Structure formats: structure tokens, C-alpha cells
Figure 1 (cartoon, rainbow, N blue to C red):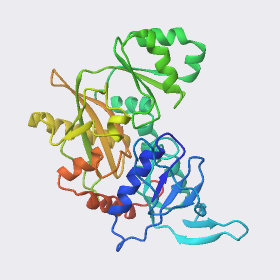
Figure 2: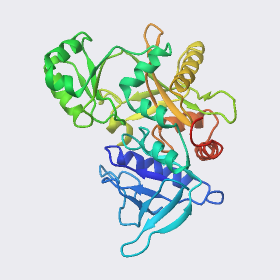
Figure 3: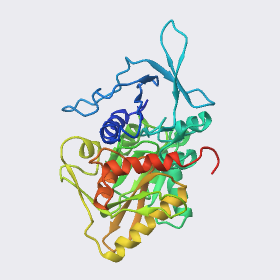
Figure 4: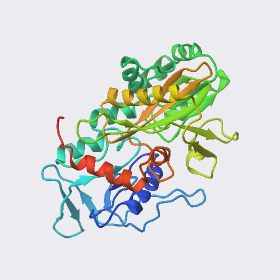
Length: 357
């Protein structure tokens, strides 16, 4: 189990890791918890470190443990103690990368594990990278014939050198718009803009997380989510029951606070939508999963509009994974309890080769 990471979703990763560590069958698996500190160091962690939010204090990796490395080659985990010769802790059979955001969910650790010859839970390098970058994700989803919302991509060079043109491009979207980092998650750095005078400030806020920004036209619709799980062997992926995200009126959108602090969000499963729409949505979720070449588990987020249409908002290749996160709740309601879901993901990874596939 690898958790933490050097990005703004460090705490979210720990919350998911705590849930998995509590649910995993220790009679079946010998678990080695590995924390990635905010500065990027790998350390041997403890099961009893703090994994939950306390008040508004976010958890972080206890970096006092032994330093670790995973050299390329035979998949052995190596410990480094000051003044001693590096010692092997044994070969790793499978890694559960409970990581979110850049330097974890974006194909980077997946590439490292591929080079080390170690199996791992979840999507591979390409699907992880595309799933992390919302701009390229939308391009690929649209190419697969899936409906996506109107948006403008703001690249670093264009914002610095041709800001007026960028602002005019955004104005075409109308108001309101949502401004978000292209490669971040957990609603970090997102703003809703109802007045163009606030647009530059919103872009600068998003740029604190990522120099590449996505500006999306607001879509009037209900937020419906569906989880997709890879099936064993050659069977097609399975889609969960859809669920509707219901957020307290005090939140303009499904932001970090609504997701992780307090009880400002609830999930209604199954969503109160017509059966035909539910079936269409589940089929579209599987199409999105396959369009990116995902593996393991993903969560696909939709808008269900007043006219009865469905629009794909995004796909998450490593969604929030506490027992009360959306994807695990969707699978629990679909007949796959949390502990079974954890075991199924590990077994899928153990039976999947590394390398080209």
C-alpha cells in the first residue's frame, strides 16, 4: 500500500489508505504500508498513524520511518538506514497505489512500477495520464463519440503572452463558468465565476495548482455518478448502479469541504432517474472506461440535463476510496461490499502482467 504524495491531495490519499488498511484481509495479504512524504521521500509507515481529518486539521504522512526505495529490476523493496548498508525487505507482489493527483494518479508511479516489474492496482500509464489531464480527457472522450461540455483550455504560455485573446475565448462560453486546474482533483483550486470581473482572479487561483487551466461552461443538470469495475478474464467491464450527488445549498458546487469536511453531501443510490436513462448512463460509463483504456476501478461523472440528455463531465481513474466515498458506496449498493471491492482490485492486479498488454 502506497499513500500520501507530493501534491495538494496528500490528505485525501491518507483517508483512503486508512480505510483500505482497515478492510484488507491480513490473513491473506502481508501488508507493507509505504508513505510518500510531501517532499517526495518514501518511508516505511505504521498502520496506527493518523489517517483521518481531525476538526479541520488534515492528516499527513509520518516521515520518521525508515527510508525506502523500489529499484528497477526485480521488484525488491530496499530500506536505507543511516550509516548502514541498504537492506532488502523482500520482493513486492503487488502495489495498491492509493494516490491522487500529480505524481501518483497521473501515470508517474505507474511508470515507475512498470520499470520495476511490479504489478499494481488500477489503470496503466496512458489511462492514468489522460484521466488526470481533464483537457486531454475531454478530447479523447469526444473522439469516442461521448458528449462533453463546452470548454476552453488555458495554457501557461497563452495566459502569460496573449491574455486578452484567452479572455475573449472564455467570454464565448457565457456565464457562469467553472475555472479549474487541468491536472488536479478533489475540487482543489476550482472557482465558479458569475462575473467576468472575477475571471482573472479565478484563473490565478487555479494556476496555484497547475499552470494549465480548464474553463468550462456551467451545465444546468443533476450530478449523477457511476463506477466501473474491470471484470476478470475477457468479460466486459461492469457498471454500478448510478447515484446522485446531493450537496447542501451552502455550497455552490461539490467542493473539497462538501466532500471531506462535515456532512454537506449525501449520495442517493440508485439515482431517481428513468430506467432507460440509467441503462444509457451505465453503458456510456463503460464506453468512457474503455475509451481511455482503464483498468481496475474508475468513476465516471455525468450531468443529467432538464431536457433528458446526458453529458460526461469527467472520469477518475483512482477515485476517492474511503468506505464512504462515492465509488465504494455505489458498489456497495450494487452488491459489492467495501472489503470485497478491495480484494477484487488486488486480485485483478495480481493476475495482470506488467508491460505492454
